[in-house]
Length: 141
Image (tube, rainbow, N blue to C red; front, side, top):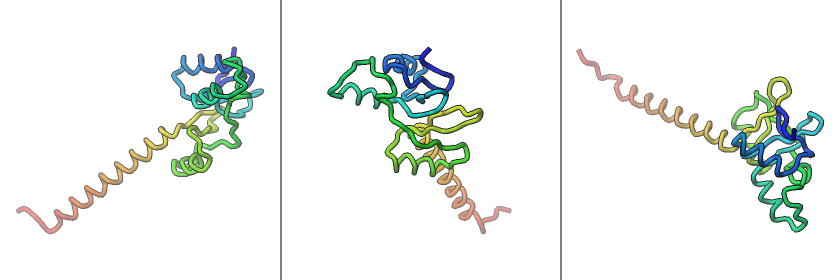
């Protein structure tokens, strides 16, 4: 089987990876080699492989077409740290080491959604603070 609990084998074909991604409704999947994380295969990688001169079709192995990754984020990294790392390396997905050595992928959309939610909470709190401040000194008896 091409897929593993953590991702997909590096020697799997591009076609196998796309099938797994379609079944799981994923935009990207971790690529594993001997149980070790080595990169990410994404829809963008597939699009790029389709435009290469030495087209192998969907028979190319993931090792040939994936995006290699040299580091993993951890569960203790902040949203800001993750966004900075992704922006600095021009990444759309960030691999995260989770319990038991499993790999999860954070997308830029996941992180931006968290940032927007945080900013909305901050704005609501500031609005409440302003409302409370404007009520001070007005007492009804």
